[in-house]
Structure formats: C-alpha cells, structure tokens
Length: 219
Image 1 (cartoon, one colour):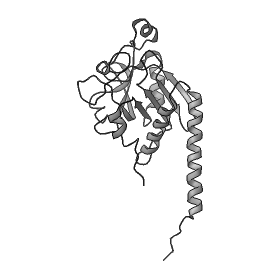
Image 2: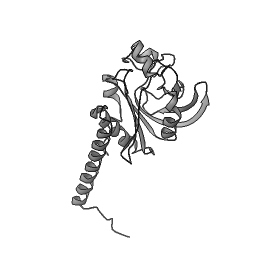
Image 3: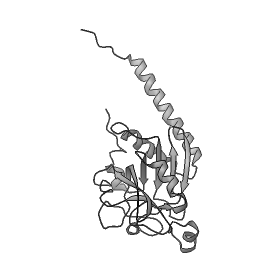
Image 4: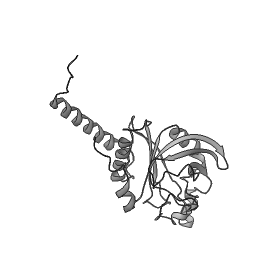
C-alpha cells in the first residue's frame, strides 16, 4: 500500500499565484485589443468561461456581446482567448421585444421575441431560412436554457446595416437572435461553431444576482 503524496502548501500557493497572473495577463492583452469593450464586462465574460470550463469542455474562442450599448455601435467582440487575439468586432442585432436602440428587457420565453443574457455554448451549423446559421445552447436554466427550443441562433441578416442604423436611429431587430452582418456571418459563425462560448451581458440586476457562472461555487 502506497502512501498518498500531498502537494506542499507552498507549491499550491505558487500554482494559484501563477494562475492568477496568467488570467490577469490575458485580461490585459484582450482589453488592449478591444478598447471599446468595457473591461468589467470582459472580465465577467472570462470569469464565466473559467467557471464553465470546470464542468464543460470549452473551445479557445469566446464571443462577448454587451447589450448595454446601443445597437448603432459595435457591441460584439470575438476573441481567441488562448492566442490572446481579437478576431472580430461587429454590430449585432437584438430581439424586437427587448427594446429600441438599447435593449432593456430580456427573457427565455417562447414568443417574447426578446434576447436572452448569459453564457451560451455555440453548437452545430445548418442552412435554413436565414442562410448559414449556428445553433446555440443556453447554459443557464431560467435565463437562456430554452435557446435551442426557441430557435435562437446566430445568422446573417440584411437589416444588420450600420449605415441604415445611423439614419434611422437603431439597427434592425431580430426575433431574439444575435444576428450579424451578412458579409461577415460565415466567417464569424465558423470561428464560433462546435463548442465555443458566447457571453451576452446587460446591466440586469436579476441576472447578475442569479447567474451561477458569475458566482462560481468554490471547490
């Protein structure tokens, strides 16, 4: 019978310190690559990704949507987290039931035409009514877990037109999907398919309190 080998306390502390330093360096590099993205929102997205990685296999790429920003502005960023690179900075639509230029209400209810917040796993692609599209699985029960059932997907749309948005005061709106410009849809979708993550943020107190990925249980 062999004695169990215990990791020395000093080594545990060193490893923990190294992990924190690496996480801080990743945040600093990605924040510098996307200066228009609120650093606090990016930090929350990375925190949610780290929490998900405890129980799910996660890919190297992460999309961050900040729905607290108006639709007339760039508000979606796609990162290669492992490579510490920004891949895309894009306009993205929200659901017509969520509001005008700045969405204010969110839900996971069928027929609400509202966007959902929280962490999503990006799944398989298909070609449908909106062309090349990407299915999404919400990872937060009561917040976004019915995304697949509601047909909430990423797809390209002609109404995601920044020039038209400036003229009419808002971007065109979806039925709840995070639609992007048709010109970039395939490239963005291919970068996010097959297990990458998407984090959708808004200053919504109920979600901020309830999200398990923002309050990851200690082990």
